[in-house]
Length: 403
Image (cartoon, rainbow, N blue to C red; front, side, top):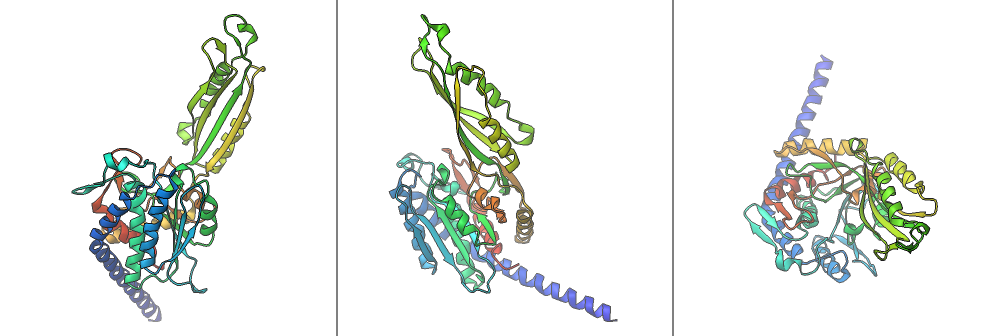
């Protein structure tokens, strides 16, 4: 009898929790739907403020626009001034009580790959469900989605823990000044949601990303007149060609490891045995162990022609974002919430890197691809699909609720 009563209470409690979650999700969904037109308007405004990584003043204008939005929602804005690149924007929302759980971090960037003036030939355009413009997918729509998710929680008085919004100005060129800040802020947080675009048309969340390495191989040879003193010369170009063949052999596609000499150069004149040659090498690895092994192999290269010399510089720019237990747990929760919101959520891995690589490497659970759904990042057909804005924003808001 006691056992039966106990089980009944447990079932009743679960029913109440289920109904409470269902009610909150319905509220989030309704609010996101109501705000869709406002989201699209903000996206249009942000896309219209061009912000190439190389133009500090341009990026600062985008930073100023988003900072103003955040201040209107009582966000505590902190600008980290930069001299060469655009300023970095850090905003805190919600309570700062010592008893609260660690903050959540929404991570993104405001710079794009598109040069100033691109918008003249590639303007913001809304055509039915398709909205296009430079930087809209990567990742200005995601920034607006993150901001709107915070708005929704504030309106529903459901922002019960601190949320930090961290937006950078030079992610597209490797995060040379913001990496340290990303790592410092992330160490204070319990989880990280990266506002980069979702993967593919299915809009998958990214639970793994390959690490990215940039290397430069420089070869020094011995110059000589190719007609008069050919035998005296030692060609840096010939040595480089042999090294490229060796380097390419480090690729193991079945293991997801690619080592690609993407740009090469060398020599001075057609009739001179080349004294110098070089190659820029892109490395992608799924695990830290793979990255370390490839790094040792590149730095351990030996010459075929002993009269030549090799110099290898560079290294791992972004460590791999591996699928950790913490990240997998975040995804399972997101998948459950997405199902309750009425859509299917998948997970994916990708060869491209993001600032989420840095936070994941610290051991902090990190979900990437929580931004917009579309196609054409870094391409002339870059666009998002409007139909996904509201449900994905509601999901992002739900992921910030207490567990």
